[in-house]
Length: 244
Image 1 (spheres, rainbow, N blue to C red):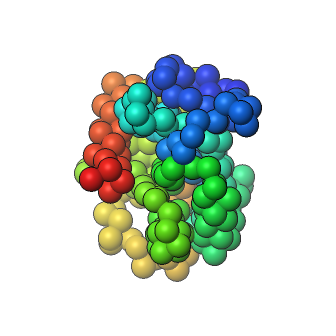
Image 2: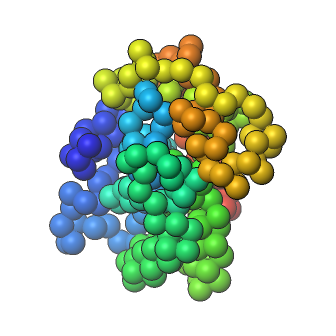
Image 3: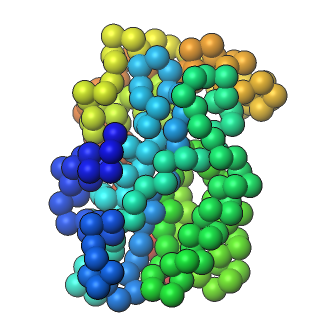
């Protein structure tokens, strides 16, 4: 999926989000709030594309930007970073990971490079596995004086990977890329029960098909509700941490 495709999908969701990549340098507003979608390129079972997390991050970012933007608060969405810390998915073809240390460095250096013109930074990650790198980068950048928030998707009752939650969200965003005829349950044990094996052996060690959850019964309607909830939680957190 090329950048233009991501933008087209995003604009169906958030018509008022400004896209940094389409601007000239003279069009960048003064001290904008910049949202950086952070995704991953990793297996998502037999039915979801490798760029699932990036698609979700981009759509999430545009929806959040639309909610935060106002006359007094200029919000823009930066191009997505489509690689993350996905080492737990090694063993499945197509997975591309830069690891925690490198991802931390990338986020820190991006933050430093935007310091001279951005008024605040928001990293929205569609991949929960990026959380350790984001937390470390956030500690560094905030200590250096930056205004920054880093968020990963957390929804009560969600399954962990390529299951009901992500499949529903993808059906609401890009139904044409979901292979529902191939959707099948994977490991449905609670994540806390399989965590030691997951850490030791990766996803392939606990779920041969790469799914942690059950995608059957997923729907566009459920996905739209889940995405709305993600946006609501993100906006609330950002307002509390950046503007209170």
